[in-house]
Amino acid sequence: MITEVDRYHGVALRLIIAGSEKPIVIGKCDTYGRLNSYSLDKRIAIYLKHSTKRLAPWAFSFTVDHLKELVELRARYASVWIILICGLDGVVGISLAEFASITASRPGGVASLRVDRAPRTMYRVFGNESPLQFAKPNGVSALLSELSATFDYENAAP
Image (tube, rainbow, N blue to C red; front, side, top):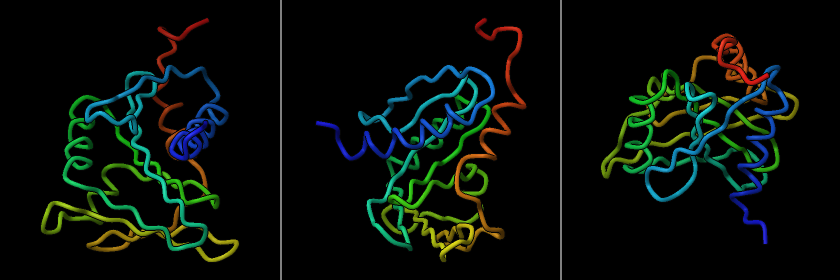
């Protein structure tokens, strides 16, 4: 049986693979016993979160362990992206810097995000401290641009 988390993660990974102009080496970053983060070409880390809610707004909570994992990913990789899978509606990518600029740990160490979208518009991302200043498109185009810009042509597979 295919689990719900596998289906949601599969959507995000497929967007990255299909959208890349170059081959990508994908690795797993399993630091806390659950596989929700991956490396791309050993340089960029992605951290996947999903919401099963059908309609906006979609809520995402980050526990102490999640936040620790993000810090560890930042120490090991040149760049970290959080990929938010919003039910069956779409996918939004935000950089770790964007995440840090709109969230803060609350009592118990929890940070949270909320993603909203009216029909036929871009996504708005709200942290528990402030909103992201600009709307985000559906997909992972900014991540793919960064991945393409940092592509290691010398060590790429033929």
